[in-house]
Length: 607
Ligand code: AMP
Image 1 (cartoon, rainbow, N blue to C red):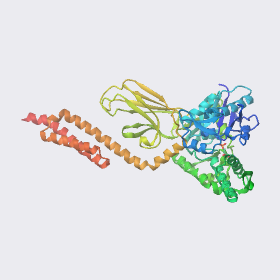
Image 2 (image 1 turned 60 degrees about the vertical axis):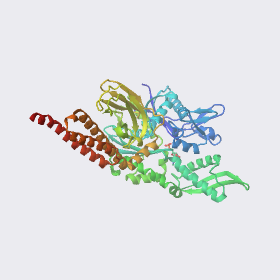
Image 3 (image 1 turned 120 degrees about the vertical axis):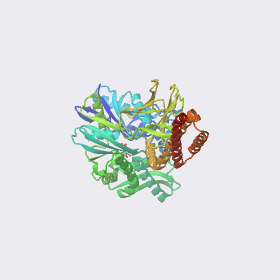
Image 4 (image 1 turned 45 degrees about the vertical axis):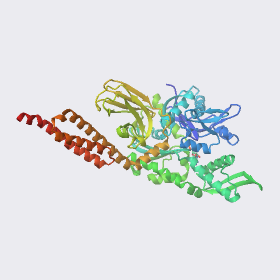
């Protein structure tokens, strides 16, 4: 295997790294920058600009300058993130025949994978020039909460860029690898990753060179852009107060506002106040209008306090899932440019009761971790073992619309797990396997990933067939499901590539809904189980009665029919108590029935 590069394909900036002589090195781009803006600019003549130079053309050619393409990758046009982008991005977002988001440029639609590939290609070229040899193998990082479709689309981008993507690695895991390489101590590490578009938190345990991810959580509606928008809103309202002009629908002005807001935000990370100066931002009958005001850090912190506090909820969830308390954490790593805001650092310090580590560079650490993973796969780094996790539970729909979990969320991957299921009706020759992901007790509350059928099961009484359903989750977090009929050996396999990805926001929503609906779901589950149990008893009593009922007296036969009819009536009830009572009655009656049947021949013989 040749050299393996590690790529952090970020929403705002990207970075590439390589292992050299046992240490990770950041590879600078052609302009000498250690990170490259994740921006692609198209020009009418067909020329493509990447990075800093593309960023520069944004002011004059915003409609053909594509930024934050990571927010679109593997997503449908009708997903909330894409809708939000459509409202704010100066370029045109449209859809493809299968509903995936596309970007229209000079009359042609580009997929986000294609555009990401242009950035990847540039990073690859930088690496080849730096190393003086061709590079094919790469590790690319993604947010821990990226779903199967987004991971797949990122892999596709790598393929389009001519890369052999050896592994899709979770960003927080990469950060922890970068921090932990060469450290002997056993530590529990929190990686708090607040980037331009999303927030991810992971908790890892490091011991004896094993990196084990204990839990992960996040919020895809939270990132640096939200911070920028607060400043944009402030400028708009201050400007309106002064001039009466509303800039909200002035697209070119908005673009300048956004740039100025981001600049001010970054300056406020080191300065206590900053001047926002936007000459000629609008005009009216009296002439051109300018904006020129000072924004203090205190004012800025008041604007963003709720955003920073919003990031603490996923932190608590991740701690809960890892069964840890804040005081159990040994190290807090900050990743992502937005963590440079002092208020973010302050709140994280308060939450975990310790200062975040100052040892790592939040802009480079993910790429460094990716190159370490590359070194692990190429054999250059020998001593490390990495155990990552699945962000949401996986399972199938079972009788009565219940969700039966096969793999719990936050289980270590790669892993395989299987459970045996059976048929629910006599002579059932087909079973439908409905694969779902989520935390709810009922199937309909979870995300449907795929449905497939296993056919030609030998006919027989219900409960006789044995179908083994296996889940196989690979190291990239991608899922394969198979169903296997033990009697015939017949098997069906499906690789889950969901037609619409399971967005991180949706994951967060599913977990939140699951907690909210836990009580209601539990009651519904009990009702379904009680009903299923009663149904089984009615069926077996009916069978026994039809076979042996003639041995009973006329009176007992009438009682038997009545008992079965009562149970059938109760079966339709939505009250758990009635179902349980009917079950107990029929069970007691069934016992009496059996006893009198056994007694009948003996007493007949006595006469
Ligand atoms: P990332 O996706 O990790 O590259 O993070 C990019 C985000 O970090 C953007 O929203 C930037 O505006 C923000 N950012 C970069 N530098 C700073 C800084 N010095 N202070 C505050 N935010 C920053």
